[in-house]
Image (cartoon, rainbow, N blue to C red; front, side, top):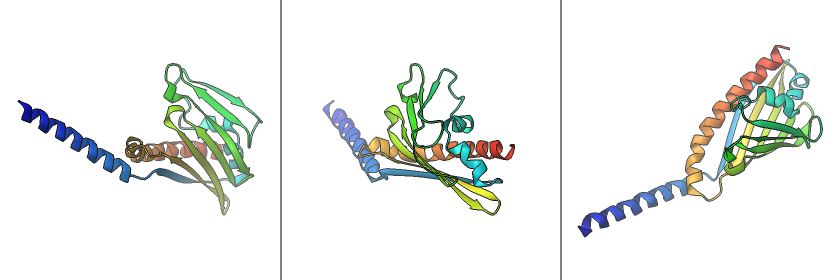
Length: 178
């Protein structure tokens, strides 16, 4: 009777140890970057990037949770503008995004507080390509030393990349249809 219990305990410890080692070996910092070419000059794209009200219209996350409330504060656009969201009954779906740096027609940097999911830095880089603008949306987050968070990081990379593709397609449509 004791041997099966001992082997079960050893197996459980072994699985936990393997998961710990795999988690520790995964990268601590996750970076995701996607881009799209928009057939418009940067000065037509920039207002959709540097104003969180405009961002909210093309964001891949807007409209997902009909119960979510979104509030804007700070200036009308640019550095210091902030967007906060809350979802009733779901602490992990609450957070904020604040624009912390801008370079007109070139760059928008935002800090994200994703509630229980951590923090991240996002960038929208605008680069002229002839009469068009290449928009690159990137995100960087530090998952810390938690091996489970690090294991989840690869899944997060795939999900965020897909969401960025959706958002960039919406931005392209929004700008090009004007």
